[in-house]
Every structure is written in C-alpha cells, then in structure tokens.
Length: 316
Length: 224
Image (cartoon, rainbow over all chains, first blue to last red; front, side, top):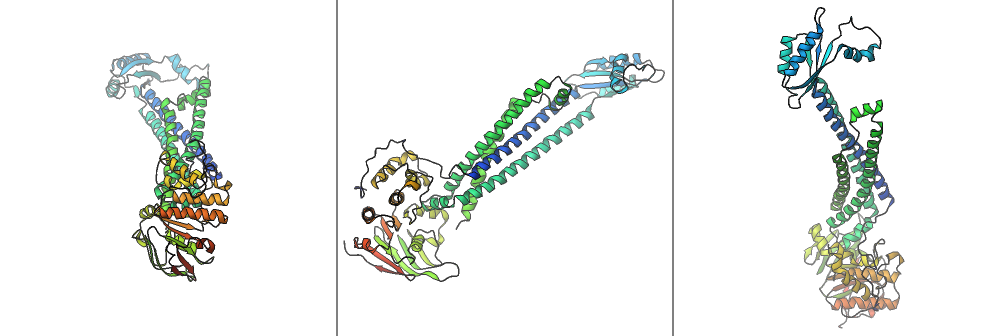
C-alpha cells in the first residue's frame, strides 16, 4: 500500500484520543440490568444461608464442648437414707476420678431454688424427697472416660446416678447437622436457580447479539473467541451482582453482630446467644462470603461461555 | 484459489436459484461479478464466502473442499478472505477504529501490536479524523470506506466486495475502485459485485462474471 488511492487525511491522532478495545458484546441492556438484580438477590440469599449455617455450626460446636465438659450426679435418697452423707460420699468419689476437674454439690437451699420456677416461692419442701445434684466439671482431655467413676458410684452410692449429657449433646449435634445440611441444600437450590437465570439471560443476549456473532464469524473469529467475549460480558454482570449482594450480606451480618452485642444482656438476647452464639461471624465467615461472591462471578462467566459454545457448535 | 464445479443452490423445496455454476478465481486476478438486480450476485458472494452451503456441486477454497471443512478450518480460511458487504455490517456500538481492527482482534492479536497499522489504513481510506466515530454518525460513503478498510486490514489473499460503490457518488466510486486495483496490484485476487456498467467500462482489463437466470457467463477482460 504505497500510494493512497483516496485523499490522505493527515490527522495526528494522539494514541488515547479514540476508543480502542470496547467490549464486543454491548455492556448495558435491560436484560443485563435485570440479571444483575437477580444475581444480587441470589448472592445475598446464598451469603445469608452460608453465614447462617456457619453461625449454627459454630454455636453447635460451642454447645457440645460446653455440655460435654459438664456432668451431673443425681442422688435420690430413700426414705431412711442420710442424704447429706450420701452426697458427701459421692463428691469424695467424684473428686478422686481423674476425669473430674471439680465437683460442686448443690445444697438443699440451692436445690429448692432450682425448683422455684415450677413450684413457686415460699413453699416448705423439706418433706419432699427432692433429689440432690452434684455438678461435675470435667477435664477437657478426660471428658470421654467416665466408666470408672460410674462403676465406683454404683458400688459405693447406689442411690447416685451419673448423667454425662451425652444423649443431649448428640441431639444438639444432630439438630445442628440437620440445619447445616438444610442450609447447604438451600444454597445449592439458589445456585441452580441463579444458573437457570444466567442461562436464560445468555440465550437472550445471544439472540440480541446475533448480528454481532455473524459479523465476528465472517471476519474470522473462532467460536472460542466469541464465547470468550460473552464470558467477559457475563462475568462483568456477575461481578456487579455478586458485589451488591455480597456487600448487602456483609452489612447484614455486621449489623446483626452489633445488635446482638446491645441485646446480649436481655432475656431474649441470651436465648439468641444460646442458639447462635454471639451472632457474630468470625473473620473466616466473612472470608466465606467473599468466596461465595467470587464463585458466583466465576460461575456466571463460565456458565454463559459453556452455553454460547454449545450454541455456536450447533450452528451450521 | 477458488473453484466452483457444477454448483447449484435452491432454498428449501423451491426451484434452483443458481444452477451449474463452474468457474474459478485465480490468484492475483481481478473480476467483476455483474448482472441485473435479483440475479443472485449476493447469493453467489455468500457461497464464495462460505456463509452459504450449495445444494449440489463442489466448492474448493484454497485447495480445500468446502463440504468437508471442519469449523476450525473455516475460521482459518475466513482469515484469508476479506469481505465487503452491501449493507456494510459494521457494529454500531464500536468506533470506526474498533470496527476496522475487528478481524485482527478476532485473531487474538494485542491492540498495541496493530494500532499503528489500523490508524495508517484509516488515514489511507480518508477516515483519519473519524476514528472515534461510531457507524451511526458516519455518512454512507464513510461507512463504505470503513467496511472496505475492515476487509483490507488482514491483507487478504482474496477480496470479495458486494456493491462496494453502491452508496457513494461516481467520483468516490472511482476512487474506491482505484483502491481495489491498487490492492490487486499488491497481489490480492479481487471479486467485485456491481451492476454499474459505466464503472466496469472504466476498468476494461477486468474479467466479467455475468449472472442471469441462475446461470453464469465468463468474459475475459481486455489486455491491460
């Protein structure tokens, strides 16, 4: 091309004076904005589910470690038994057990106080055969082995029964596992719903960009190149949606954490704290939310690329 | 370079719109494809560009049988063919620069590597001051030149141009034709579909492929 065949326009364009690499798939469209909204909502719900499951899992771990470190000896005296000596004997046996860190026997007054919520105040309970409780705090390492103590109590104080709360802890654990599994199932359903929405949006975008796809093919673009352009487009939409949904979820958990601090000393707050711990996500929990957002972004791009590739390969 | 052997085309169960076409386009040749409106010039151009499959006959492009081409081979072949479409087929959301650079971008080349090349070509076709303009604000002639520049940017071995002068005044049409002749001199085989007899007469050395009634007649050009 030695000689210009048409007039030469000597415009000295600075290199940055014109657009050079605009996206081949137009960025803004109604369908694109709708997809961002759908992804934002789904990401928010997925983050809530993931965060909620983490809170329950953490709380369950705390419940079980607390419950399994406590055990109770219940002394049920017969009509002619000296309850105080039975309790003293049981405490002495418990205190010698290697698994026990400390043993505290509830006095008669303390035992009666425990019954106050059910029986009311001011009653004379001295004539009733109220069982006496001995609260054992177990060593962290020895919490599993209470067989020797159980045998020693059975032979020396047959009126005493040892309850290590294992059944209760197992139920708590099962409940927590059920909640986590339910959360995981909800999470998967949300991802499937989001994937379906991305699929519809990709097919819609392909129909809208049919002319662009044709031109790209005619100028020598490969299917992989075209699919890559759609991937870039949808990954951008996915990132926007995931950022909005993820930030909303982070704000939700941060607010919930602050509110739980202010509620911590109210009766309702204590119940919530018993259920969900401090209702505060650990840093690892927030990292999990970031991972969810990243996964949503990648999923959006890769899924649309796969759909476009399949569509293009079916073209004659 | 491009060989048609008994090629026929029908749409669905309708009659054949093109029948028994046999001709070849040799390397570094220059030819007009002409005929009345509706004779099938654009259809034949689409067959040559492999965007349409014949219902019978054989098309060989760069020595390969089009019927047995895999998709990857088709992509590779299209990179050796430049095409100017009657309706330009520029992408409205891209600038003129980006439209012209599109084939290079589709080949996976880095923008920095081809920027100077694209700018030079745009200036060469007289669009140096319209590089940032999107196609909707370009005049018909400017769109035409942008479409031609896009076809030329890969320095194709075969250039197919469908009515490349259909939207411009006679003066600009002659200028654009000179551009194609220049390209032909540099080694590209050129096929220009047009029904402008006056324009063809000005380039008498060119071979003429005349299509009518679904048949094709070939007339060699005068010695240049």
